[in-house]
Image (cartoon, rainbow, N blue to C red; front, side, top):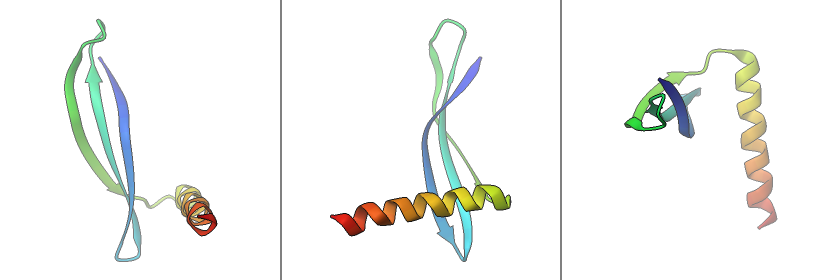
Amino acid sequence: MSKKVTSIALLNVNGMQKICITHSEIDEKGVITEDNKRTSRVVVDDDVNSLITKLYDFAQEIVDSE
């Protein structure tokens, strides 16, 4: 059994970064046994929060160039 991340959403909730993750579970034959499983966490790791800030900055650069 393996798990494959299918989407990630980043949210700023009350000044904290929250990551919402959707994934599928796949058996050894390649069959999706569970789809759209969801979990979320508040990001407490400073290094990860720094990466999230860089992603937001990158997204802002794209929007600003439109």
